[in-house]
Image 1 (cartoon, rainbow, N blue to C red):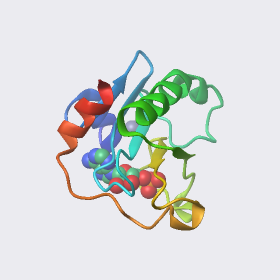
Image 2: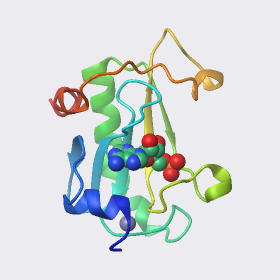
Image 3: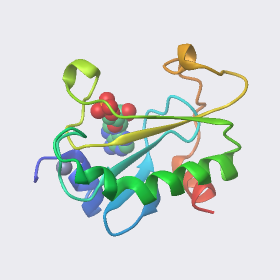
Length: 133
Ligand code: AMP
Ligand code: ZN
């Protein structure tokens, strides 16, 4: 889709801090991280949300586990929230399917603090390099 932000990121037309790529999926850092290392994993093809086509979850599966393991190993995340917003009323703002991997740390644990932003300003391209290893 020519006017889709995440299609443009997948195509490399808009820069991103990439942490993962394979044949079917791309992972990159969220520009407004809730917690350090907040990553978005998207299918390469345009699908509006995770309830449009069941096979799109298979396309993310390898990336999901790979990125999750790297967030643990590279950043020391002791927990990770994995979530996807489907529909505007759920908070979806970009209508190209994406899964949020939100690393969590012992100083701000639990669901109640999920939306309490505690990521400090830092260079996302350096952070992506650290996650990629
Ligand atoms: P959602 O609200 O679930 O649709 O999530 C969209 C996410 O995309 C938000 O967390 C935004 O911070 C993030 N976002 C928006 N623009 C960009 C961008 N250019 N690069 C990386 N993340 C982005
Ligand atoms: Zn798209």
